[in-house]
Image (cartoon, rainbow, N blue to C red; front, side, top):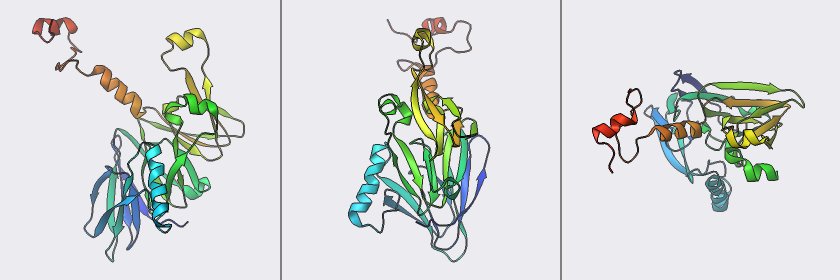
Length: 266
């Protein structure tokens, strides 16, 4: 497999976007909904799966698209090709505050495993598949980390993460314990398992869940400080109830003020 060679530049701090420069006939694939803007002369096409099965007939395309259903993604992806005779640019935006991480798959032995919603875009020719767990613990209790995406090929790919990111290089046998949702991804050599936190107080009152992920080196691991699931839960917890306009944060009266304003019906 030979992916297209693309150049890129990442802009912004908290809400980043990546601008990809395409030579004539070069292409890039992206998740539906990540497109931001593009120069004239770029053709946009909706394709089954990631397009890497295009030379394997209808069954190959259906198999590639079906794998995406298992990760909760759309059957379709979007491909962008430069149809002009000079360089053109197309940009893709991160869906929530955080960072965009560029990954050259040749530096990871042709494979990188990431959270199922982390993939943003990649050079045409990169395969976006699924990585199943072979371990019972991960299958039963893995949460976000049970079914993960695998990015394979020899081209550039881009993943996005929430909040601040950290890169950890693990030595052989070195272990790192992480909240399952905080994992962005890791190189193929890293061993990934689920471990029970233990302790009655931790289990009942800890508030951090019953399990965390154990990553064992050698290999490279990327961590995010704000998983989207955690951000969404906080937003939902603060959302007005029963169509109310506010929960009264910042007010001395708080919820009592809502009662006096008539926001609650009895």
